[in-house]
Image 1 (cartoon, one colour):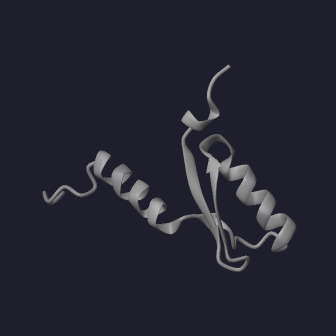
Image 2 (image 1 turned 90 degrees about the horizontal axis):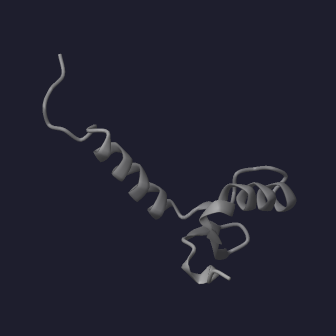
Length: 73
């Protein structure tokens, strides 16, 4: 049996509930949606930690070459 502690987790925060939890990567979208539906009438209150989301966005942009200094004509 595999050790679940090796599965990557993502920090999810809810400012309104004043909670932060680690959710398995595969379950993040469903868990956030379920929390927001159940506790916040579907409003997007709980979310992936914004600092992590920013890091992921920057890594993707860098990988796509969006940070290149060369001008495109």
